[in-house]
Image 1 (cartoon, rainbow, N blue to C red):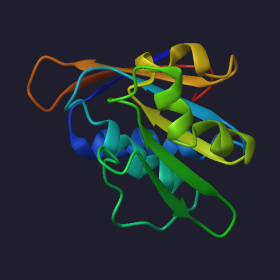
Image 2: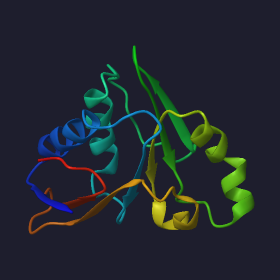
Image 3: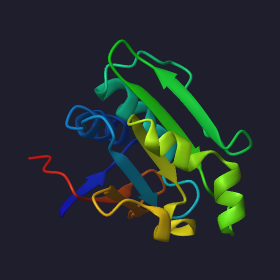
Image 4: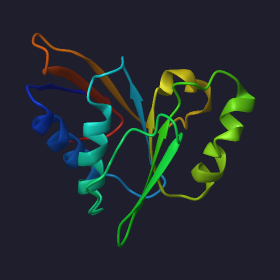
Length: 144
């Protein structure tokens, strides 16, 4: 496990970028933590690290999934906040996207923990000492 302390949105984006540069196709990145912790900012960096030039990374709260395409990678960004049953999960298309072999970033993974691949990368977000500061712990990939 690697622990990081982000003092700004910019640092959170940079950490996501660092992780994105280490990922291979088919990887699932599972986010855990309360609302407003920087998961979407982290995903913006993740996309950059994957070589995806996307200026409009946004939370897929109402769409459930956003797709971002790069030259070599695709990133599927899920929001599982409203998912509470297996039927709900199936209706998102999650398993189809999982089978596509691209990279998935999944917000609110605590709601679908039993459906996550065993080898997923887990990212835990929690508040820091000040409003814009975050504790971020990453399990499942070596970032050093």
